[in-house]
Length: 234
Image 1 (cartoon, helix red, strand yellow):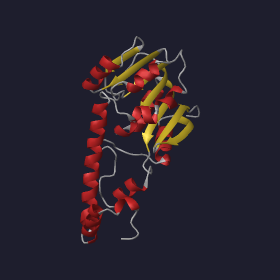
Image 2 (spheres, one colour; image 1 turned 135 degrees about the vertical axis):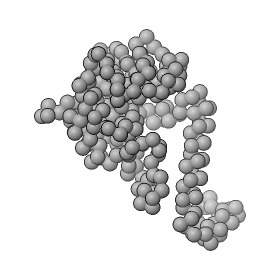
Image 3 (cartoon, one colour; image 1 turned 180 degrees about the vertical axis):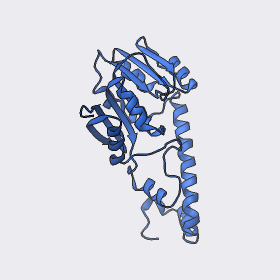
Image 4 (cartoon, one colour; image 1 turned 120 degrees about the horizontal axis):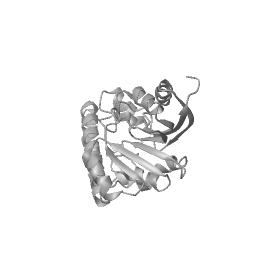
């Protein structure tokens, strides 16, 4: 055990380590994954409750800054899958008008109660069936596309009503761990409602098939951030 890191040389760890050496990895690895996922879910629940229903990742990751980079005061923005309205409210601080849609009634009620503003419209609507009677300068999909089965269909539909598409999705190869989990047949997605977690090639292919040209693609926090414009060659 002399090669153990300093923080694992205490006697409780030595006991655990001895047990692990005598237990089949084929059993322990799935058990460990299940427990670690459970504790991560509990941690997310607790920190969200502590911060009045808003996950602190918003202030730590500040991912909305990518979207705000391209929003100007004259712009109208469609925030698809707005959830509890955190991103929508930050977009509204800069844009002329934000239309924010989500199919979850509870999320929209929370957004209206905590993130309302004179230039935000919160609408209960499913992105798949939503039919606006107006165009938007920018459409935002922040951790939404991976939840949609017909992704090419939805980005193609958004091309008809928006000039710019801003996308944020989790990267499949954000770490070795998801790929390893998938290789041994254990749940590997960071959310079981995800249809996909993209490789860069998959993301590029889907956006292109929907009629979008990628102008900017950045990678941060294990996610892809993409700005798209119309592919005029199509």
